[in-house]
Figure 1 (tube, rainbow, N blue to C red):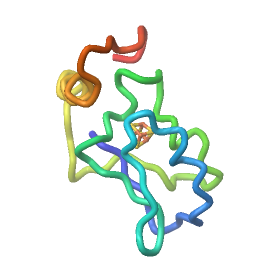
Figure 2: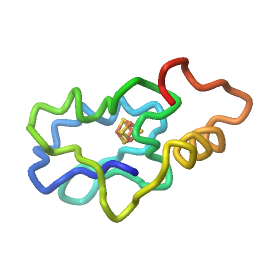
Figure 3: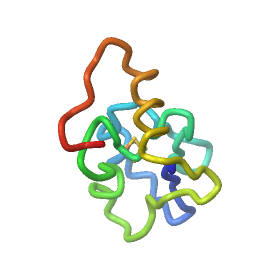
Length: 91
Ligand code: SF4
């Protein structure tokens, strides 16, 4: 499932540079994740990078409104990165 950023976001921007899917952008009041681009870091990293670098606990969390299987996340990653191979150990 895609991740989302909660209203606890302090807009530090640490997450934006970490997202290799360019799913994170600065919204009107806080940073936001585009669920059409977030693969939960499947294809990119072993665990969600935004959650790892975020200085606030439980600010980058799984979004229950966007439940997806690992296979669906990998398919999304392939569409975002045509011609590339997913990183080993990330799916
Ligand atoms: Fe980007 Fe990974 Fe965070 Fe999704 S979980 S927004 S792909 S860094």
